[in-house]
Image 1 (cartoon, rainbow, N blue to C red):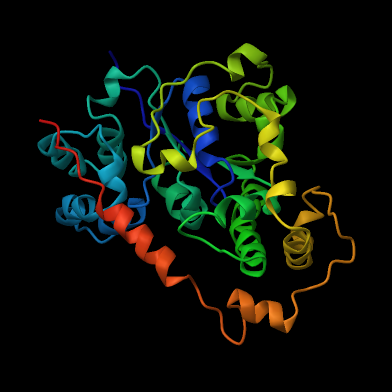
Image 2: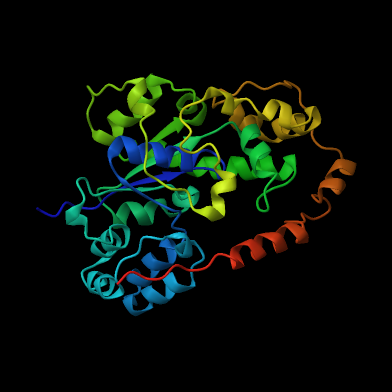
Length: 320
């Protein structure tokens, strides 16, 4: 079998916007390999840029996120691939059995922060395609504020969402041939027009059409145990009920404060506001949130719980 080139599909977004959901679906639709998040890419690519390929294995060994990868290549094969360059190295990392044994060579990477590396990834992987998924910021905040990481008040949540979304929007505006922006709500509701637009872009086929059966096809991505509680809907099929839960999960005042800080993006993205003249948080509310006079980044207890959860994740044995 002739070896096929590595063809990455990098999905990025503000965290809690459906990157894992979309990654699992694209894995099924593209017959690609879906991996757990690869936050360690930045350090690996930096090591290649500095000519320090001797540091690669150490980076993987120290990475919490690589501990979540249960399917790993033989280290000798990985070291040999590193001598050939960035693409052969990542091809062996993603396809431990060898990329020539895979029918498509498509790597679906759903790491939310991919757009913070957009230029580096675009230069390193010429065949890469980028998918930016946007979700209503109020739904994103309703999702993240219950977790042990991320913003836990509507002021910080709104600014965090705006900053994260802006990078992907800029990339898809400046590089439309390699990057596309799609909407979580349309995908999650089974909008065939949105799914078809996305798949035509990824397959470079303007005549492609999709059916409901295809977008609901069974996938083979197994969410890591560590994050399974955060992705309970992944693999459960398309369901529009996911998109409106924030209206009951957030209080009216939380929604109003979020909209006051995020209306510059909510409006252009087509998300209808509930408060057209939303009032910003008062000084008393900002004090209660830890947003004034200086921002308190995270509650110590939440940070401690997150670290303890990570510490309990054991690294699987290496293949070979």
